[in-house]
Image (cartoon, rainbow, N blue to C red):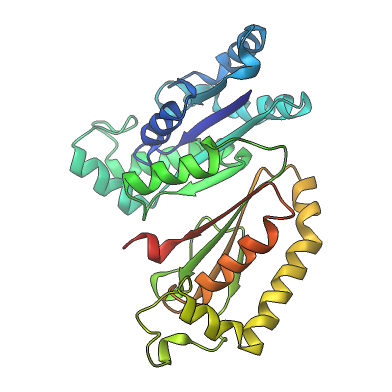
Length: 287
């Protein structure tokens, strides 16, 4: 059994995340009051087929705001009981959430005659802080469309689970801004850039011509080796801190060549040592 608790800001994509989990075979319950969570989990554990099923529970501001302060204590109790579960929190920039509500013409749960949309979003940020602090994985959906969010939920959460930590190597371009979801960031802009080499500008770090070029660069191999050594040294300590997910982001100028190459190499290297290692290329996935 695997239990996923999904929370986050209104307009951040919680319904999309729950729909993706439901399509992946999870039994989903949305808008559950926090105070009912222990009873529901106890009921799930008593079910004779629970060991062979996965469950996803949506908790948000609509009906649960009065109980949110007790959520961290409940999560600590669940962790002490060694139950297989994860807490996922979806976030997004205020400007993007305002845009989404304007496009859908839906009403924010906390808005009203004396509270405009921006104030409602800020209040929700404050009320949901206890849930965000307990999350195993925080996903910022500001730059994700519905398809990208569904694919991210599927690859990071809905796929078969192991007992180990789920690791994501993500490439990005600094000129488009660093990712907000990163736990660790490495900067590859100091490395030789294939962008300036004849015939390589329009290729990516997954193309054999770029791979061969970067394979032959000493500085690139030195950085790759240093990152491998650093992560190999610290995996056990991150995992010992009850981490279920970790995102290592590597950036270069445009997110096309060097960062893509390094993420692909690191995914290949650590796949032999860890059960769940994934790779994502932020700028390439936008195309």
